[in-house]
Image (tube, rainbow, N blue to C red; front, side, top):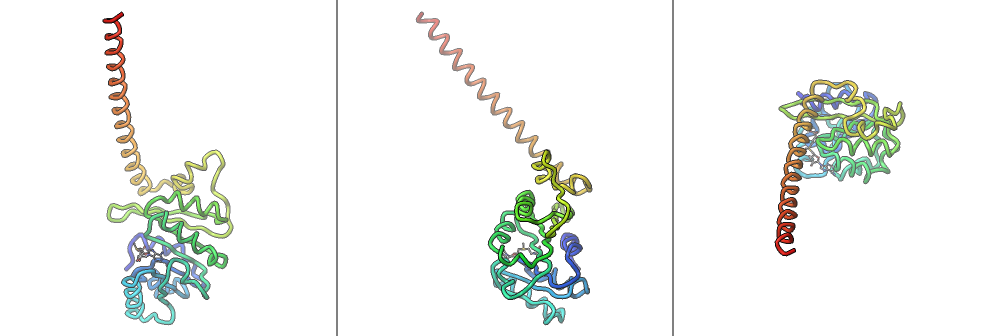
Length: 229
Ligand code: SAM
């Protein structure tokens, strides 16, 4: 059984060919996809020894050796000598996802689809996609255990969802999500709005305090000068 978050990620994986799940941990995603006939072949890429061992164990327990392969390595380097149709990078921060994509540029030309699930800073991932010839084709947002997760799917070609006069807003909120506005979108951005409101009122208070201080200082100096002049 897959988490709601990974289930949504799975929906965007191309059925045909190979999925490479980078930072796969227990290989839950490729095991689920290949085990259920939703993808032909899986690569579970892992940097770290512990999760890599868990991936091997999970693949073996599901009798998927030969159809899902665990490979230890940094980011997209596990694609050395391999081809992947879909690359998934999920459950990490946006900056780490971007750095994995940047470092692994040379492995991307054969990839048809990217499915990215940044835990934070999705705007940085959208910006990288846009600047590197990927078309954002859809977005999803799901809520699980009080956390809200955004999922971005990109292809080599497609209709560019960005409009010049709204681009900063679209990169931040997500061009599709801000149109669809599902329940989880409201939850995420209402939280953000409350936080911005708190910061804003703190800023106003600090400014008022500073102005009062400056006012007192000016009054005092004027008074001293009035006494001596
Ligand atoms: N992708 C899974 C998911 O969404 O549930 C697991 C997410 S887990 C929080 C992040 C995993 O990425 C860890 O298992 C970690 O070892 C792995 N990881 C971190 N940096 C990596 C890198 N540069 N290359 C490959 N794996 C990495």
